[in-house]
Amino acid sequence: MKRSSGVRLCATAAVSALSLALVTGCGDGGSKESGDAKGPDAAKPAAKALSAAELKKLIIAKGEVPGYEVGPVEGGIPDRGKVTSDDAKCRPVLQAFTGIAPGEPAANTSRMATEDKKDPTDDATSLDDLADGKFEDAINKSMDLDVTVVTLASYDGDGAEQALKSVSDAVKACAGGFSGEQDGEKGKFTKVAEEKSSGTGDASVAFTATNDAGKDGALPLHAEVVRHGNTLATYTTINIGAMMSKKAYTVSAPVVKAQAAKLK
Image (cartoon, rainbow, N blue to C red; front, side):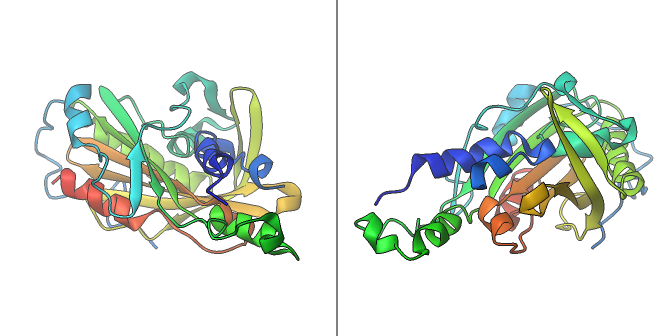
């Protein structure tokens, strides 16, 4: 039985709706340096923002992340104006979970990295091979893969520092949760918490937001925003299989490592 394109599509489609964790229909530490901290180069003038063409040369590409397939974001990044929150100060968190660059970047571009794992149904020759409850288990395992959206954005002046600060401030201010909306679809996060960041770049903040998924229980989403000079890298990872089995997962370290290497 070959890999179901529906399973892969389900995972990638979920990423396009990360803001509200609309994944139920598919499956029925501290920062290195906080965003508002001042680094040794705080007094230096910021370089001019990079162009979209320059960012496209810097973002991860096919073959550059071992164990991952890299390509366009399935479904694209949502329109900034169609992603809103009940509390304006929480919007930077919501934007990060949709792959939208925080603040007002001069240019941005995005890619998606999907973990390339063997589908446990590949070795089955018929549905009988997956009887007695094994089919559901196999489906869950087939979706146990990280899907990460990476967005690079470049800013003029101190735009990158201010944009990162807005995310860091939102993580603290929205710890008790908030509601949001994307293209008319509403959702609610019950809590937001800072996590240990990757330690890359000049400053960063990593965080998780827990979605109120009703009968499916709490569904966590993970994100990290890293500043490299006047460029921000936003990473958002979702793993539907891990969510369904209540297994812990984080922002994909190999993806962060590969992208950070290109921004040095």
